[in-house]
Length: 310
Ligand code: UDP
Ligand code: MG
Image 1 (cartoon, rainbow, N blue to C red):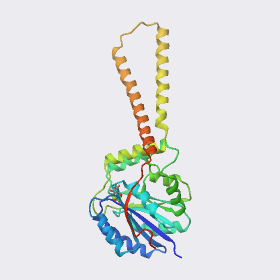
Image 2: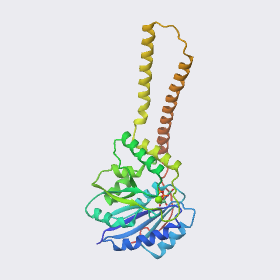
Image 3: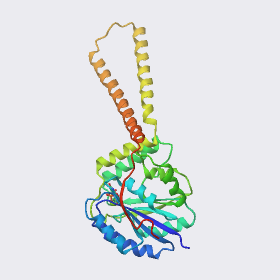
Image 4: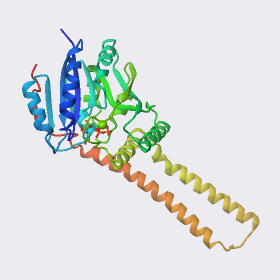
């Protein structure tokens, strides 16, 4: 029996790109040596995406649809796709054709060879501007410095996992504050990177704003590293040493109270700044603890099409 490849596609307001995606990807999937299914996850689109997906599912049994009750974000959509996919290999990709479907053939070959995790690495991101490329490089430098796990810079949301690796993600990685790409790189299994050139968006526009990306980066750093929490300890040691130095200096030189109003004010501001930043960091970690503790669902499914059908 043929093996099954599940292609998970997250969809958020992609009515323009979807028909293009389907028409481009379908013939490529037909050519594969594996059987396939397309799992579209509609992440609470407010345009006609869901309508389009329903129609596709009606005429094509290989199209499965999972529709969320509202927008839960790209990662939640990928997680749901993995949950609902039943393939021996699962590929996550975007609906905007930035991830070239031509890569599916090499992915299947690597899955055949027994790789558990296949990371698709961008060689060049044409559509992202200079600023996005620089901040992305900075982000990876920072996270690699702070975390034990070493991440592939330029690893994208385009990746494939074997059913065994997918099972690990389904069972054990249900965090609310998360970095899916990071999990994929940290679960082990034989892993390989394939390079690809990111294409321009086929239609529509990017849904990631700078603000979203910043929040995303902060969360990622905090969910993979405890180092920021130790900042308080280092700052404390630094302040203590400084205090001792000034004390010794004062005792040795036997100076009375020198006129140093400005110095004191500056030092005070400086110290309070460090203190508040540290309190803020602790607050952020508490916020993460709180959301894990509440244990709200990662996503809520309102409707499915063709799921469970052969
Ligand atoms: N996406 C999603 N939920 C969101 C935002 C985006 O499912 O809240 C999907 C979107 O439809 C696309 C993919 O995630 O298939 C990547 O989004 P986008 O192309 O906007 O990001 P970029 O490629 O610019 O980083
Ligand atoms: Mg895109």
